[in-house]
Length: 221
Image (cartoon, rainbow, N blue to C red; front, top):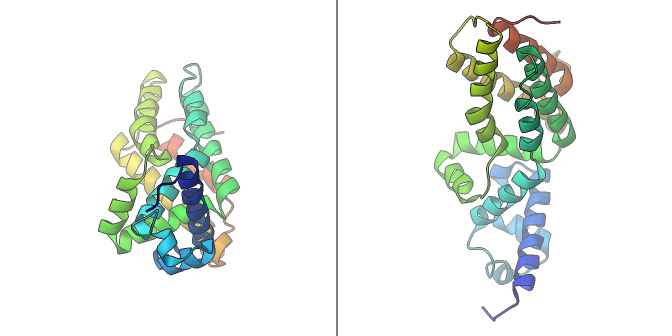
């Protein structure tokens, strides 16, 4: 490849990532092809391979950028560092943040994240390699490692009595979040949510917050 400036190189990669992102908004990530990306960029086939070896490398870089654009870690840390807040207040605020970020990105980043989850089910090795190639920390990696210890500590401080083991409650929270995400995205992006359920993130997360509080032995409003 002819020698080019770093700025030129990065601008071309940004063009390719932007094009891939746009394609992923139009069709499921698992169905996206390199030809789709090439057509979206307007580059030649040889031109795009000057910057990326394959589609999965592009997807890894796309995820890296999404982790910057779709980041609620700072907001979460502000909540979790408020040691004066009750267990109930912390739980409601966490769910409020999750609902807000889902509403804001339901038709774009959230949709792509859901598609990546489907890809992980159908092609686990490929999906694992794509995620491994991405840089930065994902929001839900953060939640899994940070949120539960904070909730458990708040539970002890407020002298609550969980109805199940905290690790089992965490599994429930994870499954519930996935269910909310799936139905909201299917409804918003594909017009095929759960029958007779009005899939609004904020309302569903309010219910989840109350459920978490009750599972930990707290009081709901």
